[in-house]
Amino acid sequence: MWHPITNVYSPPTYNHSCYVFALYDHEIQNIGKIIGKEGMHFKNITHLSGSSYIWFNQYTNYIEIWIPNPHHIDQVYIVFNMLICHIDKIFN
Image (cartoon, helix red, strand yellow):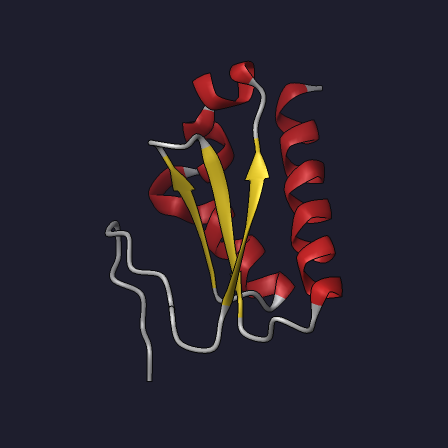
């Protein structure tokens, strides 16, 4: 069974799909607020959305969202909406 390694890029690769969420420059500059202390916000969104793994890739400036079933595209929309709401709370 797969388990992520804390603070290390360790996505699930078997039977998962990855989708990316692009950020604006001002969001990238404030990525720490979006992720939260010790990943608190990403962990909450991961848990509440039923996704497997969410990671900010500092080389591409994308948020990666890993879901367990590639056919559940609705799950990706749930995560995207949760991220958008979270980001809106920070910047508005």
